[in-house]
Image (cartoon, rainbow, N blue to C red; front, side):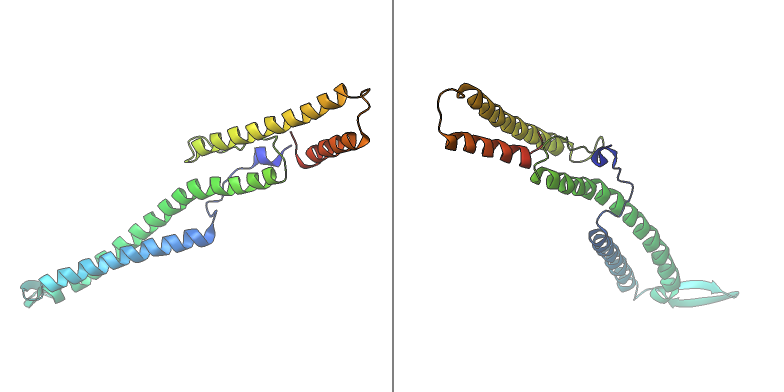
Length: 186
């Protein structure tokens, strides 16, 4: 059975280095946002006072120092949850984009070796369905043009058997036909 027809992309780490760099950049951006947000909160609350009850005592503190533990804990939990969600989204989105690109790379290798017999296939609703259709149309047109050249060679050979054509012409036609048969699967 043809391996290209049965391959499935179930591994979400299609381009590990790319996905890791993207995830780290997104998580760093989220961290920078949290630091800026916390810094602004402390900056705007530095000249204010807050009263709190601690161990049955009424305490007056600066607002910034009173909310510091809560803000840090809240930011830590929020950062963790948002980074996990971001990593999951990155894996899904990059899988949907790089997966077909890897498939194209593989199929282009077959085409560059002259195999024009198979359609490029991607999953339904992949982001590159239109590109896949265009590439398949291009592959089919190439296949038909090469088949046409091969047919023309066959017709020329049929038309000239008794015409006393030069052996060089016959040899060149045979060489061209061999080249097409050797280099292309149509």
